[in-house]
Image (cartoon, rainbow, N blue to C red; front, side):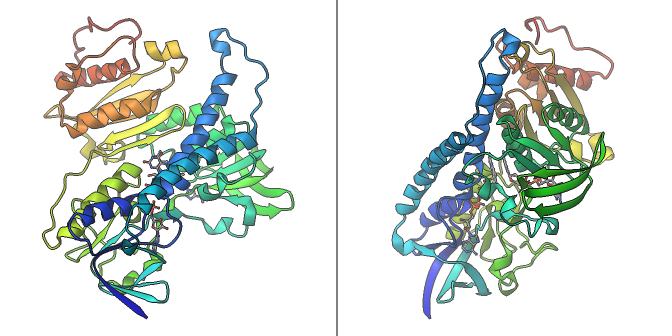
Amino acid sequence: MAIRKVDVAIIGAGTAGLTAYNAARKHTDNLLLIEGSHYGTTCARVGCMPSKLLIAAAESAHAAANTGLFGIQVGNIVVNGEKVLERVRKERNKFVESVLATVDAIPSAHKLVGRARFISPGRLMVGEGIEIKADRIVIATGSSPTIPDMFQGLGKRLLVNDSLFELPNLPASVAVFGTGIVGLELGQALSRLGVRVRMFGRSGSLGGIADKAIRDYAEQCFNEEFYLDTRSEVTDVSSVEDGVSISFVHRDKGALTELFDYILVATGRSPNLKELALHNSGLVLDDNGVPLNESSTLQCGNSPVFLVGDANQQAPVLHEAAHEGRIAGDNAGRYPDVIPAERKAPFSVVFCNPQITSVGLSIGRMPAAERENYVVGKSSFEDQGRSKVLGKNRGILKVYAERNSGLFVGAEMFGPAAEHIGHLLAWAVQQRMTVSTMLAMPFYHPVIEEGVRTALRDLYGKMIKADTDVDPCLECGPGT
Ligand SMILES: Cc1cc2nc3c(=O)[nH]c(=O)nc-3n(C[C@H](O)[C@H](O)[C@H](O)COP(=O)(O)OP(=O)(O)OC[C@H]3O[C@@H](n4cnc5c(N)ncnc54)[C@H](O)[C@@H]3O)c2cc1C
Ligand SMILES: NC(=O)c1ccc[n+]([C@@H]2O[C@H](COP(=O)([O-])OP(=O)(O)OC[C@H]3O[C@@H](n4cnc5c(N)ncnc54)[C@H](O)[C@@H]3O)[C@@H](O)[C@H]2O)c1
């Protein structure tokens, strides 16, 4: 049995693990990055990048099919599924290669391939033959798709994000389970590429939208493209010779049984912690078996262990995984002199179409009494000038401010260019801007951002006096 002693061990060479490695290395040269599977990260290999590539193809097909609005007729549109997936993989591989180049640049003495688990506090076993004694440990093991029992046994008919992009061709039909972020992004993309899609949700949730009015509006929009039920009643899912048979209660047609080539399971992700034998780690675990940890330091209690990225499930998105890795790597390097870091404003974007963005405080999830402390402004994109020009005039934006201070605290949007609007609003939250400061900023004309001004003016009007309109907007052009 080989035994190695290091200052810092990092488990998992994904986005969080790699940034943790870089930060910890500024403090010590005696560190180890342990990876139990492929290098290349979830984001590049099976997450953000291939999904966005598939969505880009879908957007292209959708735009081609919807030129009639502008008086333009396009000939017969043919989606070549093999070529679509070929491009997804080809471009995806380039993103993976750029990560692999980063990993290659790490000295081999700092890397170890094998699955790690705790054998006691501060001691890890990697595979069956290597024991690592580590003064400090960063857990950066990511997350994996959760597969509910009802889908077990479907064999190759069951897809998750990891397997979808490896299909040689686009299937004719896919039933998507889960109306969360992954389900919505991939399900809509498949539908826009000509795949027959039905989407089955369970809890009423849709793409993480907290506000009920925005959620209902979005559900209606998606149903104009494909059948989506956020509270579906699915009575049977079985593997049959030609595919998967699904029995469900259709919202309008009652009980139905339909056949699909595949089901795509997008019912959430669980942190990769089970394999770590955390009962040997000495860490205090919550009811779900996740070590308790502090979000400003990522430290687990007073221990020399840090938990980052999807593994802690605090903010399972790429930029947060990277930020958390940096904080934890630095703290593991400097331990016991741990320093709390400022966290970024909460921010997410869902790349469905129209897009969804959520920023800052989630007023929609607050109890009614707490919500009283906030004022809500709203705008619709149905009549918004630039959105109409582009034929993208669907959507709602809600913006939130603290009632007493006028501080801008958050927003939620389903609508055009939400990936960009979300950035403006997230930066405003993080800069602790007030609504009046935001309204003093320049707004060009005609742009989609004018819809933000409309919502902020509505908010401002409600803040200054509930029953008084703000002054007319003299600088607002038509359709803002
Ligand atoms: C389909 C999809 C689309 C997404 N799109 C976006 C997007 O558009 N924007 C966005 O911000 N986020 C997106 N995300 C989320 C984003 O990909 C994740 O938040 C991010 O990749 C998490 O990084 P991580 O370092 O925590 O985990 P990972 O990159 O998964 O790294 C964890 C690593 O730990 C290794 N590991 C696990 N257990 C062990 C062990 N016991 N021993 C050794 N190694 C181990 C794994 O092999 C893996 O390499 C998407 C996710 C999915 C699934
Ligand atoms: N654009 C992005 O930033 C992006 C894209 C993809 C994923 N992600 C990250 O990945 C995480 C995981 O995404 P996800 O979509 O897998 O999880 P999620 O938690 O967003 O959604 C899972 C959905 O599945 C539903 N569900 C659970 N069991 C079900 C069942 N048996 N039948 C039908 N529906 C069921 C849940 O009610 C929920 O709506 C997200 O939280 C997000 O942070 C981010």
